[in-house]
Length: 173
Image (cartoon, rainbow, N blue to C red; front, side):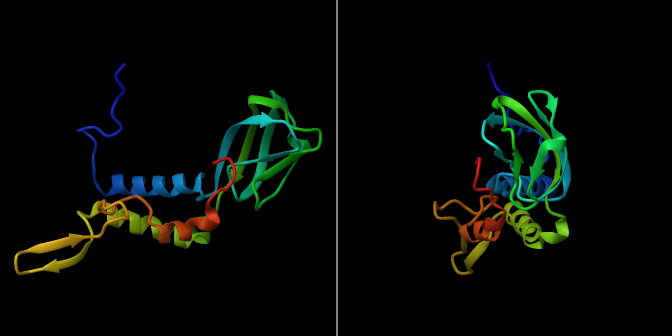
């Protein structure tokens, strides 16, 4: 079976493309969407125990929780800042055994450093390369590169990962 290309010859590689790529790089590095506040339904695997870690660091509300198809919303407690929900009777074990509908994420104005980083990544990736030195005689030019020697684009630099550190999930990733 031939798999379709992710990017095709018909794909528009314009500023909007690089903006989506930068958003994707940041969200991928953090292992969750970060911002804005959204309502989302997550289907999670149960491993037993009384605590379940959600792929979120900022839970605003739990709308509905199903365990093996049974609504247990009123029995669930949650932490707004840790992504943990608990069920005193214990979570079921099984693939896809738990469904959680929640409102989570940061308001965009709460994370200006993340928004700024996405803008920086977009500009860097959409340019033909960041010139770090240039000589007129013999027309030499040197582009900014990462540790591996590749011209900088969407991949995050160590300093950028440090900016994201407070938002990176350290569980389930």
